[in-house]
Image 1 (cartoon, rainbow, N blue to C red):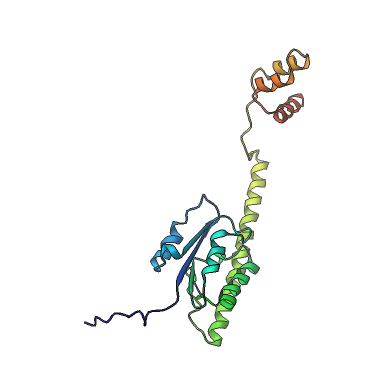
Image 2 (cartoon, rainbow, N blue to C red):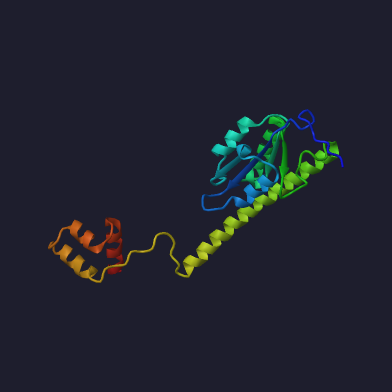
Length: 210
């Protein structure tokens, strides 16, 4: 049996990083974190953001960028972790691979691994795949948003209300209004007895009068 063990001199000098993003604090990052840990990413080199991709002011991503050195390797689960649309994804890929000079491995798409195919044809294929997938990712997000908008519009047509539930009108609301209009009680008391805000009181008053 060969018990040869790599010496420090033969082990790679680059550092491995992992970046994880979920779009809100309600989503679970466990799947992405587990994938990074399986790649040998230490907690010290794992950066996690829990916020939407509507802009790129993400604190952990920006912190990670300052740590990256030429030759380092960055793992991401999918390309949409890099940006919210086609242009941003391509721009961040260029910054990471060209300006900083690191390698990137996209776990959901093994073809997108800059360590593979360093020749002209390999780079061409990787760039082509990146552009196609970036376009698909943006298109899918736009389609999801359109479906959500269509679903909300259809629900509203069926009478479904969104936002905070409507506060029930008290059974004696008409009597409260009558006392207020006859100046038997001040407006503040009418609002308090109705259990509503002033704006809701006026809105329900308009609804009652039709």
